[in-house]
Image (cartoon, rainbow over all chains, first blue to last red):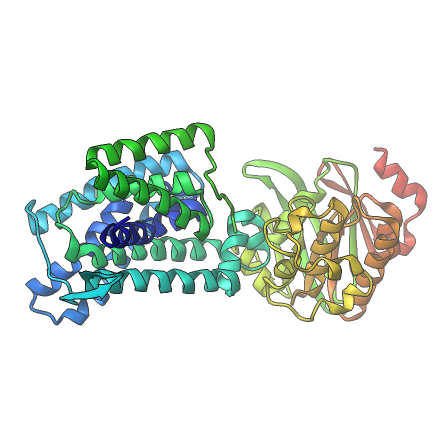
Length: 282
Length: 227
């Protein structure tokens, strides 16, 4: 395998794991089938467009991203989502409608055309005997470190334990003093914000447009189907298999075969192993 | 004696379907109110109405004079109402240690490990892999160590070995002696009468016996259970 293919594989797997993380939290922990997940990725990707159009400095991209995504998620949680926890089919229909609303709103504000932004880190670095974009290397390293920190937090923090308790036994969680409504709202907003951050990180490497979210939703869903819900390990395995299959087949044959293989794989998992490779509430 | 919990003319159940009618009772500091009756008479409903997972249709529940009526379960817990449910009483996916450290606690569990050593041996084991009796003990210890003023226990002795029931009784007496209040819903009459200071017998959702435990005869207890 060539060095470039290997690095592209690392890029595809790490970014898919980051994009799917928010869906894993919202779907895996709260049982909300968030069909608007890709639209939160899209809103995050528009953050650099907003800052550059307003003439704001580049470092404001992260606060603008988190504020815009967080605000939308907060309003949606308070008005719609909090009535749908644990109601997977109802949440699927409601968030499908929300996704359309968000796409149309962004189209109204920014138009239907493609937008592009420049990466904050330019140039290339020499790695594994090849020149590779420095921004992508920094993102891969950042995602690996971020997931390591998240795994540590998940294993040790009291908030993570409380989320596990709430998912496993919501009535008992209330009885031991956990405000499950507030914790669910926090987890939903956090999940949406990670999707927004993923969009912001991906923005310099993609074409930004209102319809871009759908592809991220589908690939994230496939990653969770294959890897299983509820564990970071499952998310990593799922992202590895989906992004790996798509990248390798896309490079060896073409993208159509890559998509076809991923779709077939996901259908097989839904049929033969619906809980995925690693399913856990922990 | 300070009145910790007052149940005042309470009628309620599951949404519009009432299970309990016009229940009144009170728990003083240092006392154990034992609630008993056959299956389906409303013991669990009473426990859940006090704890907050069910809402009364009429009447009120007050903790040291403060009405709990509009408060959800987590807010009642923070005010000092502890709860051990009859079923689903532990977090299956969490370890024993995590189960014991979720809420705000008044004391460390170590003191209870002397009476229930199996818990100490299984601190890192997921609670869902323990036997039914062990899960009951874990839930009981969690309820005992929490920082609460009144503990609501729903059938804590069900499925527990006799020697551990004896330990539970000792723990409850100690907690009451320390000034806590306990609402104990039970069908195990020997356990109930050993720890209760006041007895409340229920039948078909109404109170049919309301007496100091020392004044209740064995015949009265048996007659209510055979009603």
